Image (cartoon, rainbow, N blue to C red; front, side, top):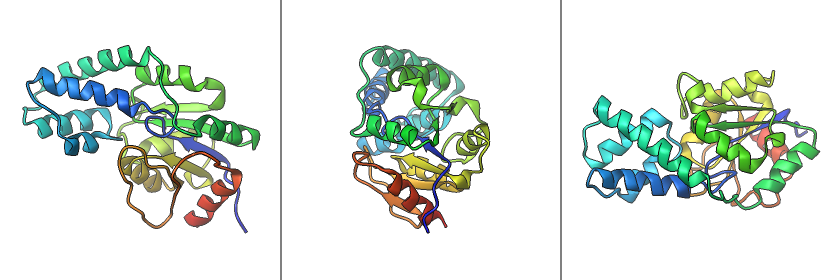
Length: 223
């Protein structure tokens, strides 16, 4: 018999919001600040990565030393540029708003779980609507961001739940690893890059039509 989850834990960039395209603009501009062009391979490696890890991946990819000065300056550049871009409209991913509403209508709890730092996540919440979430946890609020499980364990704890009572919804390999390492059930909705199939992962092409039965399917895959 299918088990109903107690909560859904949502990734933000690429899952609920099509904001990876805004990050793409910013990281490519950052590479050009160093006189380099970002390859698609390096760009794809950045998707879902936590802030400090992402900057080291970027500098390694463009062949520039990840000195403390470069990392600090790059962090400031990205925060300023992404803030500028997020002041404009942030597009939703297909079906995301209806999926959030479905979870609320089903009486389930909900958390936003993102590697993006708090100052930038607040812009995302302005678009998404805070009423959809009981809690939110950001990458700069845990010891280690995704792919470490810290952020999902923290979200479940704030909800007063075990990770195994929650379904995570993710779009990236990094996020999928974090959710499963924490012990969550998992629905994968790939966005910019493919996510490998693996035991315990329920794959869907889109959030369009997501229903309570699909959450129960993910819980069954976990067990």
